Length: 448
Ligand code: MEV
Image (tube, rainbow, N blue to C red; front, side, top):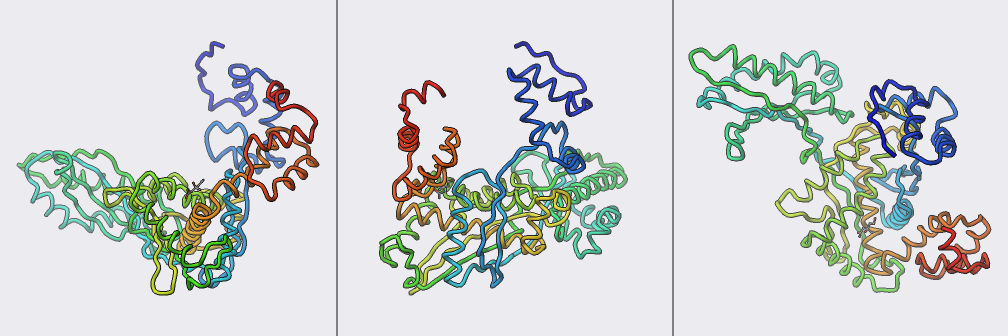
């Protein structure tokens, strides 16, 4: 199929966009149109809301929205909303929540909420001391010139916290930064920070222009942008219990379990291949809550992994220790999120997620998200060091396999019950399915 480039695609109606895609890229026009329009929301005004989140919306992309109940966090009960496609994540979180519910629950605490952004610029000239003096003696200008932008944030108790000029010339000749720290209260604050930074960059360029006389330095603004690495926007979540209370039911002794667990965490601490998978498991829990609450999972991911590598080597985000007769397990990581702004007050499911959590502020939500990551990690490591991960994982994945095989509800019930005490694999599921249906495995692979 030879496809011609399209002009003005964004201006086409939704139907016309789909028509063009169907004509150029698919072989099943009626089915495709039906499928895409089938995912439109029944209420046109709600669909319009979704259409306007991004450009060129043609339909909605469904993800399961699940809930992990029984999370006791700082002595308050939560049912945590999770949007995720991976079969076992919500089940694992729920299991962990129940486990720790009987052992005092989770403690979680925000350590800091400072966000950061930079004006990256080049300084062409030798007058470095002059530049630093100029910056320091005119700091108030940066606050004054951003007054209009920061007004509402200041009324809410936030705003610009600090500005500093940083010499980065050891990295790149002539490279300097104005580093600005922010308190963005309950918003993630990306737009606020970027608007402030662009104004600060303008102020800086004008200040240098107006102040230089005979000297010839020049400032070249490269870019003004927030950093998604926010090591001062930090949260810690933890659980602990007496080793005698671990009693986790897999048949191994309590102390042996605690020691095995700590060893697994140590391997994730010292070995990057394991650390990446270990942290991926943590992010299973974190991203699911981030998505459900309408936050930016790309920013959260980028930041978490940068933090995991902050000392020059990628390492575990979680930690475990045996102290006397107590087992301790904790996580500390930066999470920069918001409970106002963005789509938090627009997306109906996101609004529901916030209601479910009791309308948390940003700091509460950071605590909940960190707990979801820790809970997820606990379940994963617990399975890994006892039964292995596949037993639980494949049990949850069984329905996906059966749906792929287009099993009926009755067949699904029978097969799920068959596998209750057996380990699931793709081939064993197919075998049992074929047996029940009275067909050969070979005939199935031909028809698929
Ligand atoms: C799978 O999505 C996540 C795990 O691999 C995490 C881990 O290995 O710790 C199970």
